[in-house]
Length: 109
Image 1 (spheres, one colour):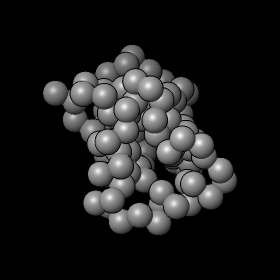
Image 2 (tube, helix red, strand yellow):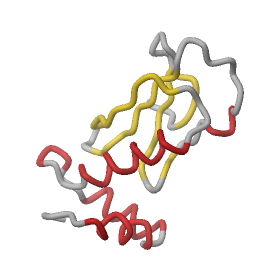
Image 3 (tube, one colour):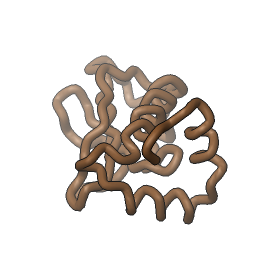
């Protein structure tokens, strides 16, 4: 993926889970490959989440894979725990509270 047009994300979503995983694992994240996909996934996740998000960003996990990190507001009351998904549209997600403590999603370790 050198250039991304509006249909590229739609094409990404049309891939089956195995194809998305293969692409995901082959991206050279240190050169920015796949970054537009990660940003779009993050924006879509935050946009559809019922949770009170305070910050969200894309990071690079050990081994060079993208990780979506979403931090919830200090006022989060624990509602909608099923919304703490481990992955979203093919990318792993980690959820933290306002104190940066893990509260759900992908288990780092």
